[in-house]
Length: 197
Image 1 (cartoon, one colour):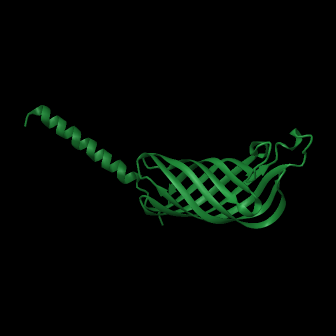
Image 2 (image 1 turned 90 degrees about the horizontal axis):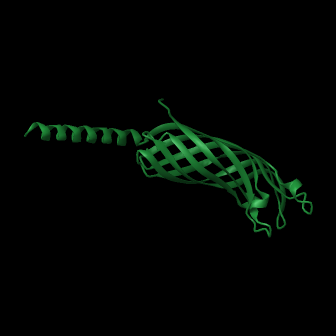
Image 3 (image 1 turned 135 degrees about the horizontal axis):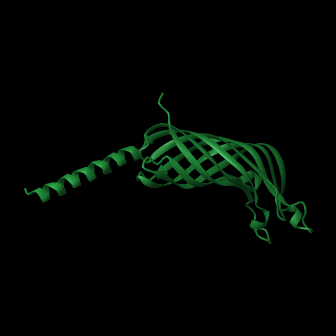
C-alpha cells in the first residue's frame, strides 16, 4: 500500500470514528431536564366570521420536563408549565368590545416524544394528556365561556432538536382544551440538561 492510499485510509477511519462518536452523543438515552421558554398564544377553536386571527391573545410561556430517554428515538416526559396570555384586541372592535380569548394557567401532564435520532438536526413530534388549572375566557361571536378550575388538555408538539447532542429545541407546542373551545400554545426555545443521579 502506498503512502497516498494510507493517508486516504487514515482520513476515512478518522471520519468514521468522528461520525460514530457524534451518533453516540446524539442518542439521548438516560435522564434529562428540559426547560423551555417562549411566546405564548391563545386562540379559539370555533369558526368566527371575522377569522380566528382577530381573537388571538399573546403572552408568556414556560415549561420544565423530566425526560426519561428509553430509546434513542423514544422518550417519556412528565411536565409542568405556565401559560399567561392577555387580550390585546378587545379595544379594536367598537361593535364587539368584550370578545377575547385568554388563558392564565398552570399546566401539568405527561407526553411521549418520537424523534429521528440524527446529530445536529433531529425532527420530533410529541403527544400526551394533561391538566390545566387556572382561569380561561373564550368570548367570540360563537362561544361564551368564562371559567376557572381544572380542565383536561391534549398537548401536541412539533419541533427540531439541534446541535451535536441535540440539546437545543426549537418547537411549536399546543395545548388543546376541548371543554373550553380554545387552544393555547407557544413558539419556544428549550435546553436539555443531563441529570446524573
